Figure 1 (cartoon, rainbow, N blue to C red):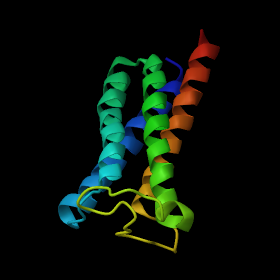
Figure 2 (figure 1 turned 180 degrees about the horizontal axis):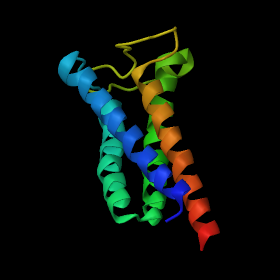
Figure 3 (figure 1 turned 60 degrees about the vertical axis):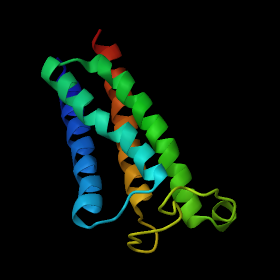
Figure 4 (figure 1 turned 45 degrees about the vertical axis):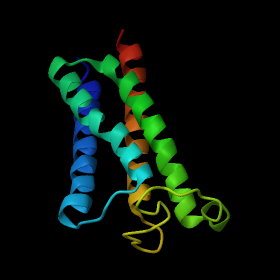
Length: 141
């Protein structure tokens, strides 16, 4: 297996694991109750940890297509969620989002870093890495 691909799989696993542990830290240790959109983002992030671990163990670069799709879907939700937190015209028209408001911001580091922003960043990292893995896999064949 190409060393770039193996490093990419390690990166996918590590980033998704850190994001998963971070989300569990915010909810279970800090006590921040996730809103509905946060749960949807978790639905797309958590499987990437398992998928990438199995892919790394099997040295299966083709799994990058699956992680790219998960990251694209999860990232889209993160982008929307971040938009309703930071853009007034979007937050004014948000329907009810469950027990916890999706426009609420538990953290707001440097005035722009919120939990959906962190998730979006990780989903973008996973998406780009997955696309590079697919490109490298194609080149090595």
